[in-house]
Length: 56
Image 1: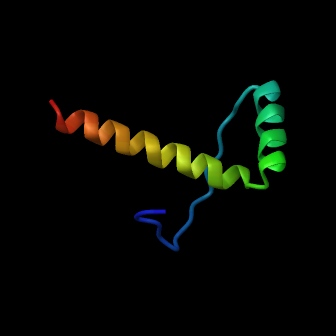
Image 2: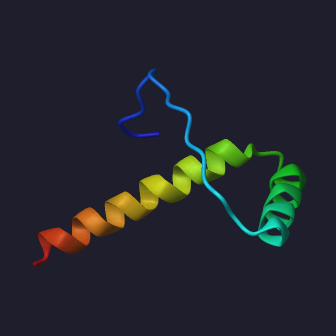
């Protein structure tokens, strides 16, 4: 991933139990970690917001 550093922090949040169960199952089915998917989603969201703010 772009701009990936070796420094990691522990990030904790609360999500609905049903969403967590579905998410975990899909990650297992796709042979990816939940962490990698969350990292990618956050990275994509940041890029989107930065691009959006550049257009203003």
